[in-house]
Image (cartoon, rainbow, N blue to C red; front, top):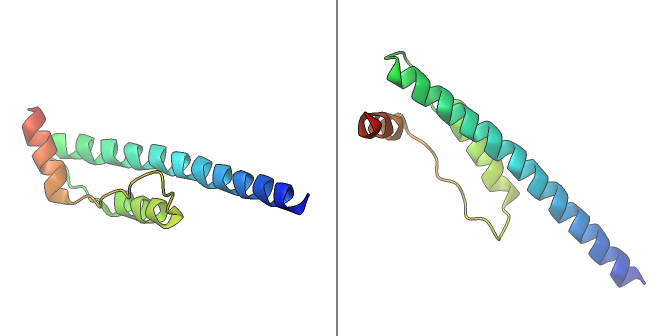
Amino acid sequence: MSVHKDLIKHAANQNKSYQKFLTLDELREAYIEEAISLCKQGKPFTTDKINEVTNEMNRINLRIIPLRKLVTNEMVLEYVNRKN
């Protein structure tokens, strides 16, 4: 019986980690959109918030999901220039 309980506990912990990852992923995307918007307007922007969230996501270390890359200002500029 204890193996069954351990498996249930492990699954619950995995699900909790995955849900946190999804929440952080949404936040990361919002920060990316914010940086893109500021860049398009010619306003100063930073990728600091994006990368803080990215590092937190990568610390969760879900084996089924690859690590997220850090974002640089140059990456945002390149993306905006490519879309225009």
